[in-house]
Length: 461
Image (cartoon, rainbow, N blue to C red):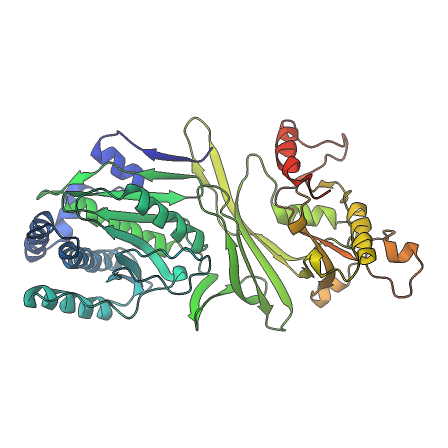
């Protein structure tokens, strides 16, 4: 099962496990000039001794200055190593402001938020922060706080007590929102020390607490480099922006889509992300992206393809496109997990069952639903009220229209109605499984999962 760990490994081992980045200590030290080293050491002292009462607010500015200084160093280092994509990471003071475009109503408020920016903006913002410290005035909250879809890394600042659970929650929410990122790194800072968090679809790892000293700024530089790497590895076919108060994504797969997310599960796990919208022809599209365990589960796209392989099944959602978006994330341990991010784009929409106009219409929908349970060598395994819809509409391109519809005796045909239409739309095959052509069974061991999924849905039947 996916796990959350708090390791008792040595500091160097833990950093490598959390950040998954290997850079020699002497090379890290060489990245900073003498002036930068002195400034970092002064900031460490400031964070360790924030002032009378050890107020949380006194740690904000020094921490932001430290992280943005390391961000500039990281940007220059990465520019020398390879051709940069002009992405620089800025660490903005957020100070209890909820992030914009909060689709999932999480209301997370990291004290410092990392997001993509430009080199010029970071340099300007760093000067502003330093001036604030010099003048002894409270720091200004930047008006350019990011949306959920832009957040690269959350940073939480506390007085003395550790904020492990809060930072882990922020990382989980960030990963759920950032469907384009493979992993998310987080940082929690107190006047006594800091700890690091990494989360992806396979596991969540929280480091031990590192005390402030004159040597450990290299660990923070590793963290900043890891945030840069996460952004550089993001899926560039997905792009988020805020339109008014709404989070909007453009998705460039077989066709270009504009969608708005409305559902996402938290990692570790499949982290299923669902959004609805339109293509350039204003045809309805529903996009589902999930990190499936390739050891135990078939992709939803493959299941739809199998079900519709001999013609469109009336009443079953139809796929416009199905793709594997990246190579698997793999974790070891007692139970090995290998997760691959897959996307499926559906061209079918329906309405909730409470939109049935009469009992008779509802019964017709139920009849057609039961007809679809034998989904052409696919077992659904998750028949519930949310996966059975009425008033289906199918929107798909010319290529898909050429496929014939399978001859299934749905209720309108049986009653001899002119211009018959299937009354039901069955969706959500992500719990489904293929039935073996020769044996008529699913793979060994999967019957247990079938029962566990099916039992909570019995109330529907």
